[in-house]
Length: 185
Image (tube, rainbow, N blue to C red; front, side, top):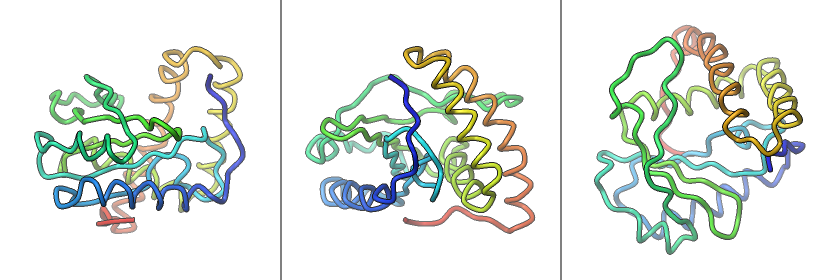
């Protein structure tokens, strides 16, 4: 069931606990580790799911055993959506995806330099700096969750392209603010 809850102040701490487990179990192949998604935006209502992005040089690096030991299971064959108006080769959207076994959490393993690696980090940082956009995005998700509480496909079919609209402003902000991808959270 899709449910949007009020912002929880413990989300950053929960991210740090999960990130520490992941670092301990996966180790040297991690080039960056970030708290992404709506729970990474202070004050923003969201699904109670912690999203973590691991940055790697190459997706073929095997982190599966380490992530299993950290409490995650692989969900095969998932790719990110292609932002509206873009035509991208499949490799720009490929990732390894893991779901938390005991806590609602996701790990997205993405390759540095790809579109899908940059997108969630820019998204997060833009929403952190633009509270009005964050509030409107949260409201849109609340309304979608009310309309499609048990229909994940319909929820994302509307949410993803709507968020691509927000990202056009984020791209302009990235240029004007000289934004760059941070190394770690």
